[in-house]
Amino acid sequence: MNVFHPEYDNLFMMGMVEAAGLGWEGRNQQARLVALYIKQREQNSAAADNFDVVTQALSGVTLDGGYDYIKLARMAYYVNKEEYLATLAEHIAKLQIGVDEHETDNKTFSNNPSIGRRLRHKIFNRKDCQPDTSV
Image (cartoon, rainbow, N blue to C red; front, side, top):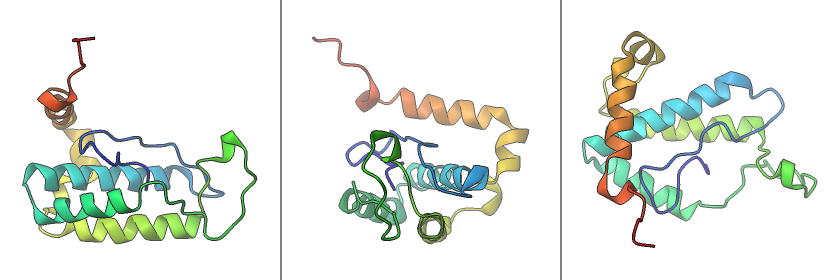
């Protein structure tokens, strides 16, 4: 689950995953997980705190399903589709608790683009996310 940074709770890397048949739905589920995490973080929930502990503990763990992928730089982000989707579903279910379903579905974001702008503003205007200009 290297979508989440092990130290910063406002830095995400989505889409850098590859698996046979994962397709856009796998990336959609990544985005759903991040949206739920942001929503839980905004609410200062225990679910977000628990998820932080999990992501820190699993930082660097590969979800390769036991496959021995060729050790090439371009294959560093390969995952096993079934294991990856199951892991996403597990975390989504935990973060979904207490969040209204319509708040994080794709229709809400596509019908109201200001939500995305507000989230970006919240994320990128945090003091701990500003560039260090002292160097």
